[in-house]
Length: 323
Image 1 (cartoon, rainbow, N blue to C red):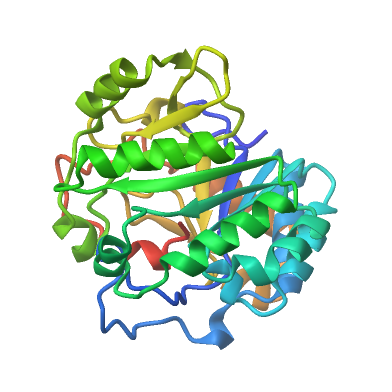
Image 2 (image 1 turned 30 degrees about the horizontal axis):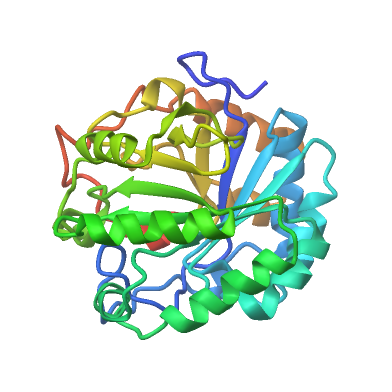
């Protein structure tokens, strides 16, 4: 089993397939950012398949394809099909900003992707334009409708809670998700890179209690490997999750690591320690050496992030980390 030094079972990998994105969301990436990884440094599909097969033999069960925007990686459904076929991988999902979803949803579903997380911070065109620095709301909504028609097992809407976001924005998103059967998740901003630190933190604890009262919600559980705490409607028809890495961190149950497009395995979102797999893969290492590097790296996984104590220690941007 993939156990870290604190006895936590790590069975969930967030796999970045590109650090490119067609948006410039204010909390994620600077408008003029050009510091992308060179494509020659990206792990190939063959390298990813080999590495994840090693992970799966040791106990990895869940894989989420992320970016940047993963659907910008050419032939991504082909990779999804290869990963879905690996023995041991029983949950393959994808995170997206939704701009390319209408074109790729059908192929992703056929390839074995069963769940989607789509970032959508508002239903107001002007607010989306201000946050994303692109006028993309119509194509994101169109992509979500195509995805819904393809029959994915679960579609979650990820809404980053920004200081200044009105209760009306959140209430409108609740109504939208209720109508379409989507799960809504509200996410606190994290101080990852300068953009994350400058985004404006909003404590979700009071928001949670207001929504509980306004919509008559109760505590509940939604399937998935992530850290969200959920409220649900009494009939179970609507679910809303709260991801609170700052106000109520969930490090004691952390079950995930992140693999960057360059082959760097990030052991904690809030720390800079990593395991570099690209030199091993391209240096002729054996599978046993990959296993040893992974297990030794997991033993260094920290007990918790230090966002509160050392908010400026993480200098990389979220887009280069893997979602």
